[in-house]
Image 1 (cartoon, rainbow, N blue to C red):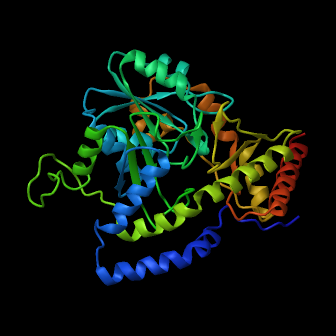
Image 2 (image 1 turned 120 degrees about the horizontal axis):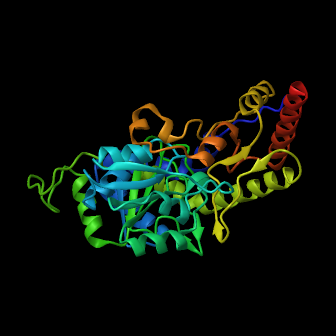
Image 3 (image 1 turned 90 degrees about the vertical axis):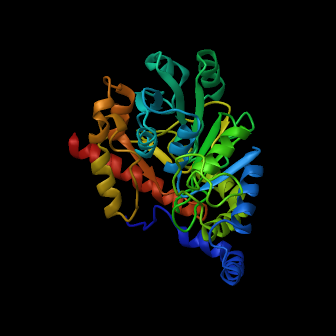
Amino acid sequence: MSVNVPFLDLAAMTNEVRGPIERDWRELLENSRFIGGYAVERFEEEWARYCETPHAIGLANGTDALQLTLMALGIGPGDEVIMPSNTFVATAEGIVLAGATPVFADVSPRTLQLTAADVEAVMTERTRAVIVVHLYGQMADMDELLRVTSRAGIVLIEDAAQAHGATWHGRRAGSIGRAGCFSFYPGKNLGAFGDAGAVVTADDDLAKRIRSLRDHGRVAGSHYSHELVGTNSRLDALQAVVLSAKLARLEEWNNRRREIAEQYRAEFAVGPVRMIEETPRTRGVYHLAVVRVPDRDEVQRRLTEMGVQTGIHYPIPCHQQVPYMAYAKGALPVAETAAPELISLPMFPHMTAEQVSRVADAVREAVMAEAAQLA
């Protein structure tokens, strides 16, 4: 069976917003405000309003969002930051680049999200912060995480790079912890035409410090007076134009992703293929549609032969990656068991119901064929 379904279709999303992007790009080319200016300020205001926070600070990428947030909070050498191990390496990278020590935690076997119990299992007297990753576009149990972090007097930071628009009890991802860190990598639910990122927060002082750090540590309103050792992590105006145009479509695109996810769940309600569960009381945005299958690598090979493009998020937990092994303190059985079983299926807003059915049929066929071969 040949089905030919791509993993992601960015062209369809781009075509939908081509008109406003081309209009605003022409205006930008005429005024030449490529660094800062109206386009960036407008997107920051729009993103803050969407996330229901007072502040949004545009940055060059999501990794910088994590690093600069930690730096702005004064978290660095000698401090520990807890994070789930089953995430993209940028979460650990941001911690180490800030000078702090990553402490890897295990996750829920049902949702693969960080839980309060996972945090308590690895917390020490040196713990200064917890970074919760809203993996695959679903959110963790924020009430329990806030309870644990508040009681311990430590900071809760949201890595919401995959969760643009997700909610917990109606509250937007990024708006619940001290800060929410976002990536706008092109494949995200809200994606730029290159690298881009942002931090959202209700903390006025934190916002001020991140704005300074992203711009070489400058004093607000001054070009040559510097108050901090900063870096260059400004959001390009060209990317801000793209993000503003796409933000107008984000809710519709997220709703379509939820419909696709529900169809996948119905397709896999019976059988050996299992979709990752959502945390109760969340409303996810399904950046990824992830299932667990036996003999994942062979199943993926068969799907490729049938024309179904897939991804793996993530094949190696962070604590088993070479640069971060020195920080590992022991086995993390849930993350380690899940890693070789996970496969990400096609998921994009313009995916049709027929394509979803074809993918589900192909997955079942691939799993059954592999099981028969092993019998």
